[in-house]
Length: 340
View 1: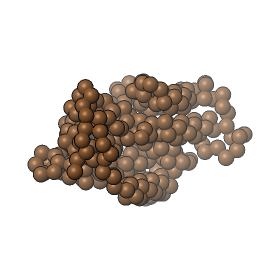
View 2 (view 1 turned 30 degrees about the vertical axis):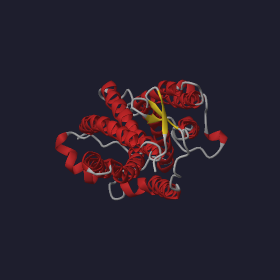
View 3 (view 1 turned 180 degrees about the vertical axis):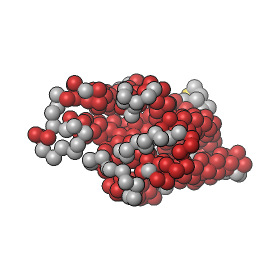
């Protein structure tokens, strides 16, 4: 039996104890598997992608991949929590309870990952094994060093804001991290660095909204299922409508970025003959799988007798997107294809 509620404004406040929510053991196992697979991608991905291409691996590529995956995942978790809370406030009769926040923990993980990347920059883009390997003054003298420090500071500010009365304010330091990553990915020596940075910035933000937004929307739906299932279905539907636009933006910016690095006449060859191309192909396949799962979830939302059955494909979508983030991190550690 559904618990009774009282209404305050446009939010339904529970007036009775809800039915117990199912154990989170399955979710914990899924997250553990995701973390394990992502770690394996980071540790063996560079060697596997470079095998037989004749390209040289950058020193410490596996560490860069792992740290950047943690950084990307941290941003996604924080951005997703902000956007999910924003969507929840617009759902009529939404229950008052919200899931426990993950933003503070994610920000601290992101700060540690950003610090690790900053130390690599201080060691001349090599993995430091002792203090003498690093020149910390380089962090203040070089463009990459300043961008690395900006990310560290922004994560720490986001962690503080996540504990404040206005947690949505952490969107500002998160935007600074996105800008820093976009600028880092396109050094001033390349052709049209500002255009490349703009494409990367839009791609980065849309990806974080898709991955993190879906994660936290599913957490809310799971919590609300005992209070007000209709509100959970409405929240998921609102997210799905926005996700369609995110997918379009991701596709456009991804195609444009690819064509900037692989001219049209060389794309097919470089997708199989270069490490960057092979990894990009894996990323495209994962995005395609996630898109199919998203369509399945949307179909269930519209046509199923119980719209919340859409959560099943949506959960697999989150896991697929988590792997996509790991593969994206691997892309950042591989040599960029030579323009022919």
